Image (tube, rainbow, N blue to C red; front, top):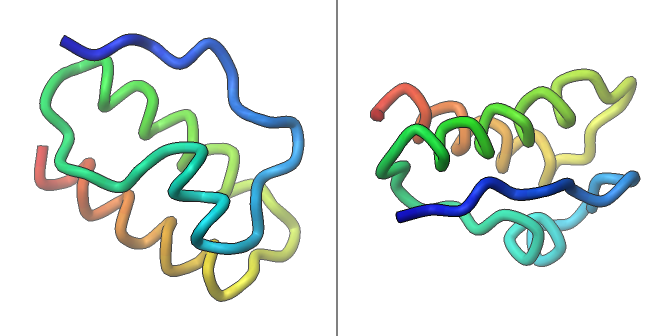
Length: 68
């Protein structure tokens, strides 16, 4: 069973290490995982400019949500 993340940092990490530390990429197993993934996706999607790592992470997270 997953636990809803209470909040993510105000500033999104720009490197993969920080992004993985904040929300590890892994298969989505339930609706709570999905809700958390959507929150991260939304936070990254609205950034005016994303780093290459943020772009790659966002793409993989979107694929994980679609697979669920």
